[in-house]
Image (spheres, rainbow, N blue to C red):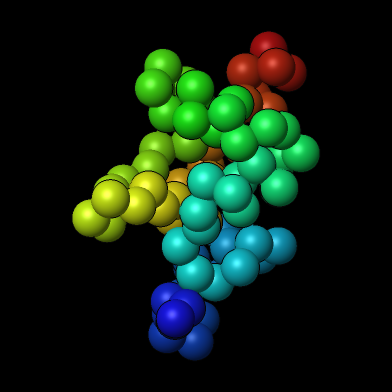
Length: 78
């Protein structure tokens, strides 16, 4: 099931280009075209987008993934 936001919610803009649902590690691997092991390594090292657990499953908020992407782009531009 997807997450919905009220019309005009600022998170709509942050989520543009990503599904309007919490992302799985497999989604991130596909999005960044990296091996799934890389996504898990990012999580272990705390260098990737912040994730959270739902029981045994790791999920990522699309807004947090967008924020992480912006941080990486700004860091590389500096």
